[in-house]
Amino acid sequence: MANYKSNSNDGLYARARARTSQPRTQTKEQDQVVNVGSMDYAIYAVVVILTLIGVVMVFSASYVTAASRVRFNNDPFYFLVRNGIMATLGFIAMNIMATISYENLKRTAPIIFVGTLGLLGAVMVIGITTQGATRWIPLPMGQAFQPSELAKAASIIMMAYLIDRNPKRLYTWRGLIFMGLVLGAITAMVAYGGMSQALIVAAVGFGMIFVASLHIMRFVMGGVAGVSALVGYLWYDSVFGDGFRGARFRAWLDPWAYPGTAGFQLIQSLYAIASGGLFGAGIGQSRQATFVPESHHDIIFAIIVEELGLIGAGTIMLLFCILIWRGIKVALNANDTFAAMTAIGIVLTIGLQALINIAVTSNSIPNTGVTLPFISYGGTSLVVSMGLIGVLLNISKYTKKKDR
Image (cartoon, rainbow, N blue to C red; front, side):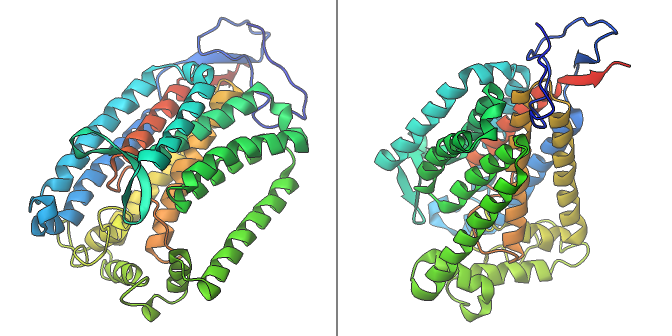
């Protein structure tokens, strides 16, 4: 297959060479060779470590609550067993996706995207509501599936597909509007079940377009406009409205002004962080786990700080940094545009979720329902996140290197 060459205006990842997932024989006169080797085991190891930490910390944060409540059958291992099962399924998904060539995702991207839109539509019809949010499709044996998590993967694959098909589409306003409409369609359907998930989908898609385009100022202006609109909406809702988003915004500004309502979770989270010290109280020794709502889910990082201290929390943050660094390296060395953009989307998804979760826990930003990847309790989130890492591992097998 002949090399794909583009001019200097084709953007960072539009300069990728021949689109193939198979090894090729090249002569020394050619400046690029495609190496087919082993996957990035650093990424593999980091994800396995984070997942194991998650299984332990979910149990540590939940066993007292689970043992004291009838709806959990007074079983202290209630969440441990379920989280262990989902971690096992995630491990299987990661290894399967690491084996299947990413070229299959490229060929089926539109089908995956439309199918995900169908599942999001099904949520509106048969979805079940939990804690005020309708995000889940009921499954047999009391289980549920959350299509908004799958939407993150589908939007990444579809945006990478569109950029790969025609990189020059991003050079015109017409092309940008088209990309925005595709991204907006899935974002709007995800927003039905929760604004925080929709913001993740929109931010990741926006970030992928930004990376692929040369027109930086367009995105700077768009980003400023988007953030300004969001802040303006939250301010308006907090001052003139009575919605829960406005309440969360007010609680973020001063959680102690709302100790029994919107500020309660934040206050308990800050107490947990403040009591952690350098080495923490030890695994299973949290005093705040029974007070912090969703201590095994959205606010689990606070329990990690309390039980493992600054050293343990810093180690987890370092692991995420290593994962992001290795993921960016995979994207830069990717074999083609689709692979590069998919890798960028996966890195943005994992990195952005981790950043938001930690920021919420420390009250650096208003409270949102975003999980900590690989660590928080949540079956669909864990399996999809590990599946995406499997795709990243597969991409890492096929790299470009200069032959000098």
